[in-house]
Image (cartoon, rainbow, N blue to C red; front, side, top):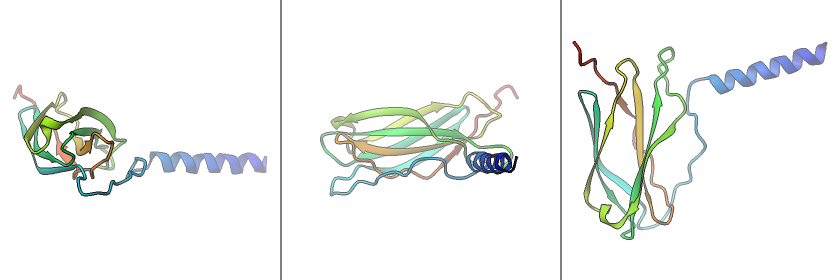
Length: 142
């Protein structure tokens, strides 16, 4: 009976640790080198139910792409959930040094989303994640 209580307590503590707020992702390996992929001049704005991201990719002249992750803000603790890949544009040479734009439709006006974006190059080197970008759609019927 005593062992059962210890196992139950350990299981409960494990479940609480997994469901708690905070950073929920594996550690990311940062790349080194002169041509490290970078996301520059990131700007965001919400227009109606669309999040508009504009930026410039720099790095490896053979190709740089970008990844966008999304999560929802938990309404009770106001903290992010698990990040999931939302969009991935593969590395291409034509994207290096040119202004880029990504439009993201916000389908729900009752959920606050967080987005983050990073550059990566054709060799698989990862740039740092951007700051978290808050976005929420609006009820257009009002």
